[in-house]
Image 1 (cartoon, one colour):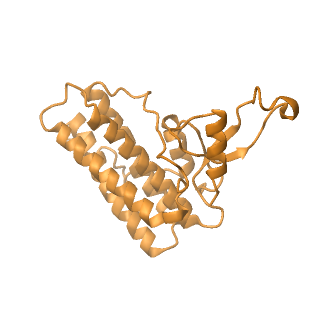
Image 2 (tube, helix red, strand yellow):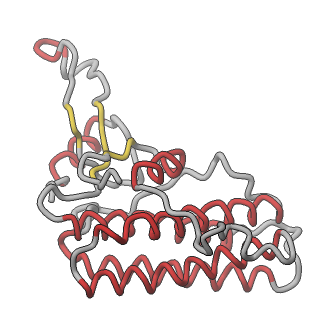
Amino acid sequence: MHDNSFLARTIHRRSFFRVAGAGAAASALMLAGCAKEEDNNPTPINQQLVIGKADSVNFTVLNYAYLLEQLEAAFYDKVVTTPPADLLPGELAYLTDLRDHELIHREYLKVALGSNAYDASFVTQFAFDFSSLTLTTRQGVWTAAQRLEDIGVAAYNGVAKHITTTGYLKMLAKLASVEARHAALAHEVLQAGSWAATIGTTGLDAAKTPLEVVALIQPFVPIEISTAYLPTT
């Protein structure tokens, strides 16, 4: 696991890129003309968020799932904290339940990863960017929820095959089953009878590779996600 603590302090000192106090791993440190002017006009570094480990596919996959659960938990927490005024009766309770589930998932994975969590050395949790979503209306919130839940389901379906430890595989299977129920709810709320709309001709939900999923969630993460250690299939 990369040690992010040094870089986190560096980022804070130079105000290169604030991510709610979180540290980040840098894949390349490129300081143009640093020999003489590095203290006055530093060029921003090319930073990447490294969420895997070169020597452990299991911890890489768990960190990948951890990032996804952090994203979903942050999304629902934001919605529940400032819900749209046109939610229908009972829908805030649905969203609160979804938030609580995702918080449990996030903490579950965090405990399982321990010091192997990609953000174990971060001072505060990562801050996600939901500015591209419409969270001021009921339609916007549920559309965003459907989008994130569908991504989550496809992510688990696509990455589980890389797990080599039975215990971890069972863990991800349990999380995936809950995510599938979340996705079904979001679909049903938006359109009655559509809860199984994502199931294909094989009777299964979609499966996406980590690289495909990273491309989908990158807009919500204010720093480039490194795919260096993620499985490519």
